[in-house]
Length: 262
Image 1 (cartoon, rainbow, N blue to C red):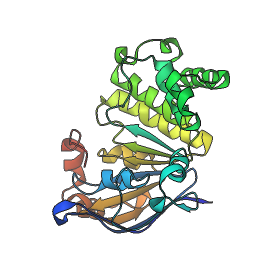
Image 2: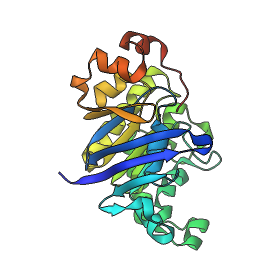
Image 3: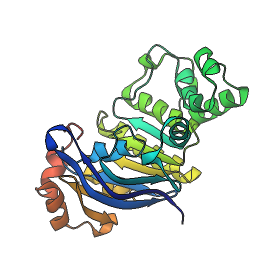
């Protein structure tokens, strides 16, 4: 199986000397579903955003699809970013635009500037967007404003937009943190099904330990910027959970649902 993402001894130091990541190394294979877990401040969001240079790293290297993306700039970086879809906790949709227009934004990285500004999408892209919305149960909402949707529906639009990029890697930053349990299950089911169907690697930041255990091929546990676990969900023992979070699994299930992202 080919490696799609590689972190090699990556560290990130913020102003005032705070180390958010400390010599982090791991690999993610094509089509693999990996959850990143850890308490607030453990470095999960920094790790995710270091993949496509939304946060520049201090040392080490990040490799995407065989190229060192952490050293790329300009057109080369933009080309690599096409391979990375992103899904956000707060959806990041354009509220006043239609669902269809938001989904089509996934093609902007492949369009010339003028065509992107004027919204000149290809007919095949429009057909693909409608097919995706049908797959996600949102075809009837294609021409509704994004602002009219529920939280779960907005996140489904976010998934469709990311898939429209034809990415090799999907990054999801707390995608279910703002959702009720029923909607959260729908989103996790869709992320798992749609990425598996297309062979897309998926890296998900999660506070919900039960979701990470139930959906992941592999779990990476962070504590204070360091990896303290990297392995199968079935091998994540109570002692390891306490080492990652500093508390028991029982306390996490009851009290960790509404924490802010790290």
